[in-house]
Image 1 (cartoon, rainbow, N blue to C red):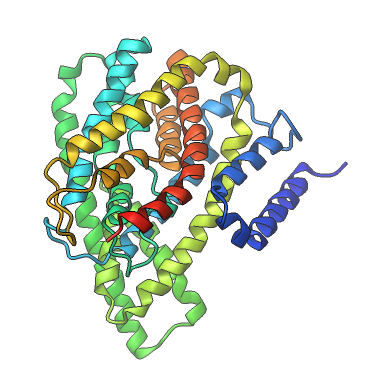
Image 2 (tube, rainbow, N blue to C red):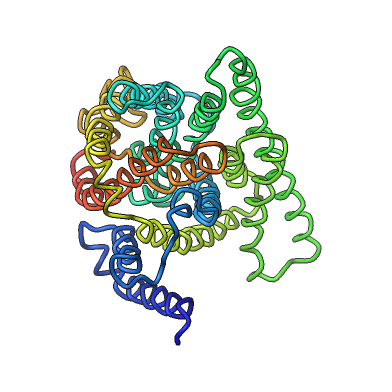
Length: 418
């Protein structure tokens, strides 16, 4: 009997070969690679070949899903940081501040209101749903993000920096929801949440991202001056910065994703040899694409028709409100009075604001928050409800945003880009 593991390796290898050889053709279509990976994952799942079979409990408590999404997100947010070379001042980062400080809470609490008013959740469960689904994804949104360090487009910059900084305000509310699930007496833990999960975790992440990245870059520069290392091994410097920053930040109870994004910004500005960050970015993007394949394949394989159908009405309500009302209206509110940096216009063009609202892509980040919640107290019927709403929302986002990204960005570049 043939080992299923060997068959899985064969299918994945064949998939990688096909998407690589056909990448030029695929890039011309209104189609993202994630859609292809998702379809193949479904094909490998229980409704087709059955090469990937997960028990019901694994669908709701999958450690592999948590770890692979965790690794993919930290690699992706580091890449987001490496792409950004804009000065670190409030005027330049105004769009980012607006998307994080205003749009993120608007999205979380609007989704929480939907959960409370229409889905039968209590406020703790509803806020957890909002925190899981509010952040945009730094992985699947690569097509609408900065293409390289010389890209100065403000739409792409805003979406890239938003993807990198999502966790600064999303993760505190994941913890808020988990605290509320454990103890519905908010007064007994609210002050601790403010001090630890909000203030300390964010501040320590920023501090660790700066210190760890600067330290490693300084050590690397010193050693390279006296004894240069093998060029093939240089790529692992980036991976070491990611893993050390993430682990050390988590050890001091900071938000590792935020720390790694800050580290990417610092690395881009710290090397004396400006070619090094470029080389690291190439390696990071390759690693990100490889992990994306595994993650979306796994997502496709765990989708089950019956539970998705059971929660289809609730999922559809969340999707319509999130994609067509909550995110667009939140962006519109957040960008009131926002003036483009390199334009004579006094405010953003309505088309640009609409694109900011539409490209609220949900994906790997939401998968990680969901998997994290499974391992930290989310269980029972509400776990199933949040899980299938989240899975369905991500699938729809992969499809509709994946199909629309290429033509919309081409239209934007022809008509609105600076």
